[in-house]
Image (cartoon, rainbow, N blue to C red; front, side, top):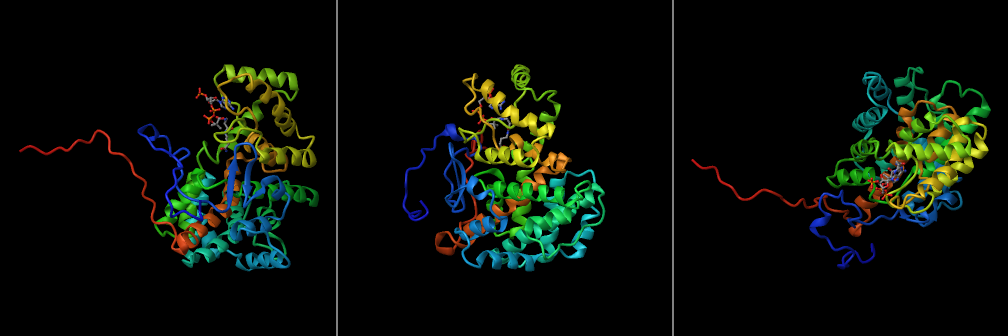
Length: 396
Ligand code: AMX
């Protein structure tokens, strides 16, 4: 498609029935970083997500930015490049201290991105994207620490790689020995890789690219993208899922099956199951179930989520209207985060955002500097059909 985008191709027949359906499934652009297959799930530049999950996050970020894996000393050089870009001006961190504590952490993230942009923007798409990828961990860690009252922000440690440094800068109370830190780092590296990108049309990515199409800078575009991610129908679902798992009184498989039946009968959703596009278990869930067996097999909340994997599918399959009875990415991620020491669910979307910033920034770079022979996509301007607006005149 991208190679012959100039030629008209019949991808879709648009009728009035498509109005007011949230652009669901409309082909509106091309994406070079990732694609979502209903059965196989997401792949980044052709690599299945399960193969990328155990890699170093810098390697996966390099893949999205360059559309190939690093070879030779390129990974080390990219790591050094990101390291050299770290460091948030102290007055930006100072400004964060004045944000309202009752505001949701996603509001803080959006505000933080705008403030950071005001101080550090270069207006070069590639430079700003890399700077933001390098600095987002410090911003997110500072948001956690200041808003939660954990203490002053912790400065980056240039000896550490991106996510190990994030864990260092978080300084999570209770995660204070080497074993606990190693466990949280392993989890967050995987979490970061799994959440980086998910095709071009998900709400936050679409919003980020739309704002960038007006030539707003990377920071402004990513702030808008994070506003899109914040809602419970998008990035906020992991929070809702853990909240539900916490209420389940049992991890016994037979009792879980009955709990699913009772939940459906009450009209509630079984969070973490189903998907608008996928029609099989999300490979990002599969990776996380396996990781949980390694990192926290005895955690009660993880055991409940792991046993629900089978009990829920069995019951949801009995309902023919449910297109996909299988676990999605949110089925177990919250349980893992809690088991590894991050217990405040209101920050889970910030962790999702920290990772998704990388994918959206990579897609913005593609759309602004590579497509249409480097000219970039024109400003977004979809058509809204005027309804109930006949020509009228004011009578004297
Ligand atoms: N529990 C209860 N009912 C469910 C269900 C679930 N897990 N999954 C689907 N259904 C219901 C739908 O609500 C819908 O009911 P309706 O006809 O009365 O409106 C019917 O089954 C058919 O839905 P569908 O075509 O299978 O899915 P969809 O594309 O309309 O919705 C999704 C997809 C994810 C919103 C839905 O499966 C759901 O609500 N799941 C639970 C919430 C959840 O886990 N969200 C996270 C999704 C992952 C992500 O994007 N972060």
